[in-house]
Image (cartoon, rainbow, N blue to C red; front, side, top):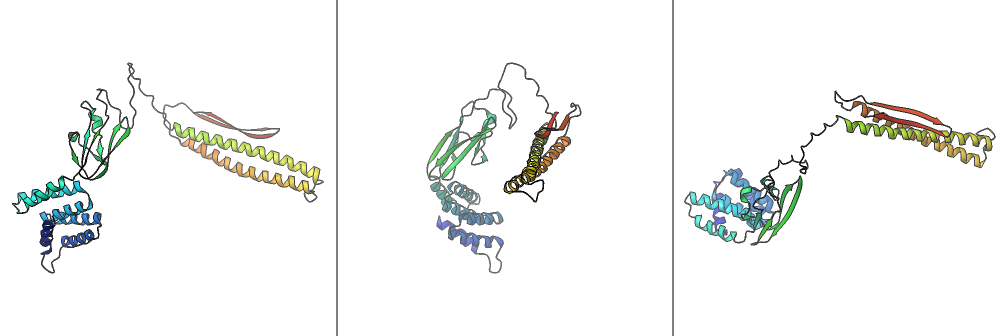
Length: 327
């Protein structure tokens, strides 16, 4: 292998002095990175060399890089490409390259994906190997892969099914996929659940009401705001009542004449009043936001009229808001 790669390096290094090309620079970069065992960057550099100046030597350098990296299946494909080019051009290296490819091939792992003979072809078409579509005509045929774990996926009833196929250097693995047979029924669109057969004609789905979800959210938000305002009103009335009682009983009718208990009661009443103010502001914002959401929701021309109502209520012990409507 190293003799052939050496020949490739000599070929690339014979460019006249002062006429170094972009491919020459990339080759030197790849050679340096390979020496540093930075395989991903090195192999990318060698691949760029082959794109700029395709040749047997360039392909051999890519193959060697991937082989040292441990990407045996990828390396085998590059050796095969180099062998094909050498054979077509009657290059003397063709026989030796073929020998190298065959020697490497004994160490390249294999994965075979199998499905039942009557498997649903629509589901078979969703099979992927390591995230790439797996051709249906390759089912049951060995696939060269790199050493390590490999992910096989397929879609059944809108859900991903997964299986792992770990393979070692020179090993192989067979994975059988439990794909149901084709029942001849129309398949649901992607993301839509399949409907079980009932023996009765299916009724057309009722068209969704435009903006219904938005109106429900708006109504819920406004209702929550109404509750908050009601709580704030109750707190305010309760705090006011306690404050007045404390002024009469412990402050001799003046805020500057309070005893210790009066100061505590009036301070607590003020805190409750401040809290009620904050709750009231938040509730009012929620009501406003909910009403806006409800009113701007799209509506069908034929939809029935909707209505909302928000009514304040005040009782002897507090107050609140009553929210209702039809949507």
